[in-house]
Amino acid sequence: MNYKLKVWRQEDADDPGRFVDYDVEGVSSDTSFLEMFDVLNEQLTARGEQPIAFDSDCREGVCGMCSMVINGQPHGPGAGATTCQLYMRSFDPKDPVTVEPFRAQAFPVIRDLVVNRTAFDRILQAGGYVSLHSGPKPDPNSIPIENEVAEEALDAATCIGCGACVAACPNGAAMLFTAAKVAHLGLLPQGQPERYDRVTSMVDQMQEEGFGSCRNYGECEAQCPKEISIKFIGRLNRDYMKATLLDPIERRGRMTPQ
Image (cartoon, helix red, strand yellow):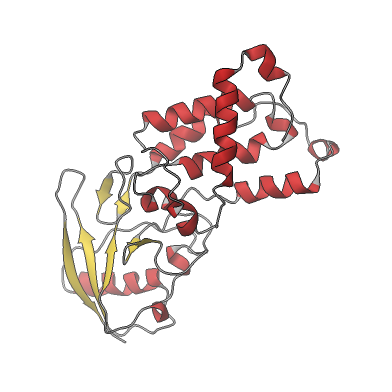
């Protein structure tokens, strides 16, 4: 099959960028979206043109590198899938497919469809860790954790840091990402000693990076490839309020998973 594409091309962060029309030929409907881009780049290279820059790594929906906005949707149509899990059978060959990078002030374009998402790394460095030594196996498993708490922590930990939540949010907020990273540690006993320092440090870093404010639109949850719930944003807000309104002694008395 042949598909028509409108792809965003941009030399670097200072280039204004533009959409360029492409025809990609000989693509099966069972071809993945990234494989289709591989075919297109081979065709461009054969014609002596500059191939399209895009990110990819695992191509199994694990790493979150394959970040594109396809027909206005981060990671494209469908729910619970990344760009690399998208197949060309999801598109009608008669209709052009528009592809552009994630749009956010905190995600500057590096080239074409590649954006700089190191802002997420700095948020994690601000507090997304546990410094408490829990010991070698099986010591970390010696602390009883209720099954519901463990399941909720695992739900938050499925975040792959792709940035779709930011790209989907009209304000470019990173609250779902930050909330998931705060929650999956804050729910567990090992994460309690730094629970409130963690939330203030990560939220402060998130704001410093230039992400927008959360207005509870819910677009982040709708476009998240791991379908992470916005309930974690509510939990982050509660912890942040406790961290900023309670004095340190009172906070220490409340350091239990809840």
